[in-house]
Length: 311
Image (cartoon, rainbow, N blue to C red; front, side, top):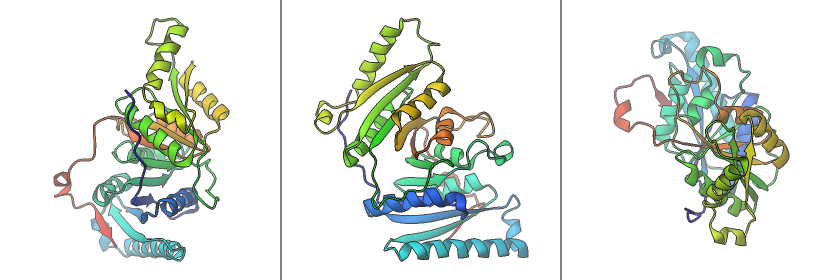
């Protein structure tokens, strides 16, 4: 059933940054979103050390912490000179992913922006992907800017082609509403897409096409067609190949999709579909967690001393 389309707003945005050049594209989108929505922006950097908090007593660790604080404040000062409201948080933790997820839980932003080194990052085998761990464990929308995405250089945030990919998971309706809300905001063309690999339905292709066309249409309010011309796209075949084909032919400047929660292997195993899309995309990908699982309540962290947040 179609849902009313609320206006998308972001009062508080968090940028996860490693303070290297790899974060430049993510920074450019965080800045653009913050300008467009008049949001306050919090810069978060994780200082990871497996022996934390014992390591805090060492001279080497203090040198690293001092450099990280200086890097955060230098970046914040540059953004403030552009008229932005900026806060900084340095997270100290034994695990980068754990520290960032807990910081997000405490900060409660409306949107998280992060970069990623992609599937080829050698660290994935040992510790998994930090970026994937974040968007698979956080209930808030996460905008991940892949390594192939160039920095945003426009004067004002603008999206012309929005692509939503769905497997009809539990959050499909919410993701569709989100995609249509952003499309309305920017007067963008929106494509709602489903890839069917044919493994689970003994129907004829025409029946499958009709079924999914109707299912996708069910998420579109009739009034939506007054301001945009949404299309429903059903692709058949191997998921990875069809995903590449959709991105090539639709040439989106924003992709939206659901992300399943973290599995028992964490992110050290084979990357899931959402991360493959992010790694191959030339535009940012906004994900919403596709299950009811959210971050644990504050009580779950009460006795965990592995996290320090410093202003």
